[in-house]
Structure formats: C-alpha cells, structure tokens
Image (cartoon, rainbow, N blue to C red; front, top):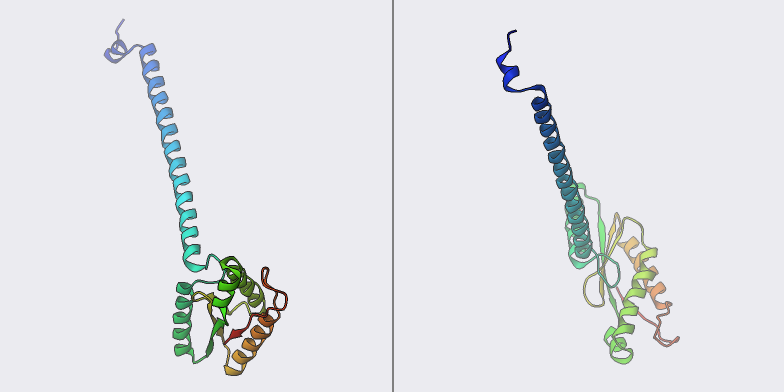
Length: 182
C-alpha cells in the first residue's frame, strides 16, 4: 500500500489533539476578550457617572439646589445671543435677601443655610419652566426670565417678594419676616 506522507507525519489522533488545543486556546482567548470588554464597559459607566456628577456639581448650587453662578452666566450669555439674533427680549432680576448677615449673626449659620434653602423652595415654584433661577453669591440670586418684558419682570418680582415675605424658616422666630430687594 501507498502511504501519503502527510498522513504519516500527522496521525489522526495527533490532528485531533492539535485541533482541540487550538479550539481550547480560542475559547480561553475569547473569554479573556469578553472579560476585557466587560471591564472596559464598567469603567466607561463609572466615568460617565463621574462626569454626570461633575457636571451637576458645576451646574447646581449644593446648598439650594438652584443653578450655580457659572451655569446662570452661561444661560445669560446664550440668551443674550439669542435675543440679539431674534430681537426677542428677556429679563434679568437680581435678588438679595435683606439683612442676611443679621440672621447668621443672631441665629447661626445653620439657620442662615435653612433660610437660603427655604428661599429656593418658595421661589422656584413661582417661576415658569423656561425661567432660570440661580444662587449668584452668598445671599444673592439671579433670575433670567425668557420672553419677558419689564412689566412681566416686575410682576414676577412682586410675586417672589410677597411669597418670601410670608415664608416661615425653621429656627427663626415665627414673627421674623425675611424680605428681599429685587
């Protein structure tokens, strides 16, 4: 009989062993690649979560939950550009809590913080969804009202003034009225 040289060199058993070893290696390699992909996906999810948290920290005031100074300035620049292009107006109200230093000095900073939080809780619901309210400084706030003329701005300012004048703040005497200058 004539024996083929390739068959003689690699008997069937050896070919099967080599094939099994190659498939086993591919399976190990595929598992390794799968674990790397999962690790990369988990790392990307953590990075996205961290980025979202960082953006939130930059955009919102930690104490009041209102927009931050940086974010309101971005909104203001965007709206100014939009107003310049379209001719549609907007209003800007600067709001200051009157005698805030006295609250901090007489009742403590925790009551001062509660006053700032309570201001945000009371003022935000008065506004339209398109309006933007931000803590600009210690007890100073900015309100950007879109498509609002001077008369509309005066009306929203008066609603804020009235609401804040009647709000109760934990830690302040019941007869203590917080007032604002707008």
